[in-house]
Length: 155
Image (cartoon, one colour):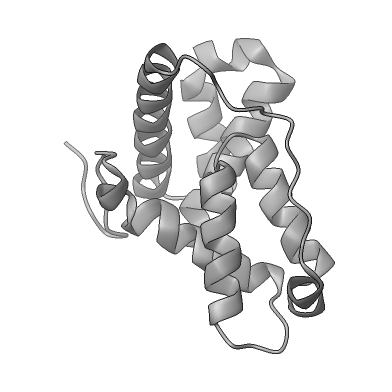
């Protein structure tokens, strides 16, 4: 389920980036996602995560006097390139460009990928790592939001 929530986050952020007015029509986005086969619980989890992240980032921006450069680009080490597929790294770049992850998250994803010990890390592996990081371990990063189980009811 968590990987599907990350897919929803990518969809939402892509829509917001391509059409700024879409942020005022979140109900249309929700209906579109339901038509694509996502559950209300997954959609709710994604929106809740996104709203918590936006709130957290806005607070950090106010506190931060010297914001880091947004245009930095991390190159893979030779060993990382031999293990992480081009598509998998492209997926990480996409998440970073959409604002779903930051530089620190990128490093953690790459570190976890390398620690897997696999001879090749593909996009599916990265999706699992990202879902685990973003949706299960954010409590340790002082972000608070609700995650819903697949069969949960929202009242």
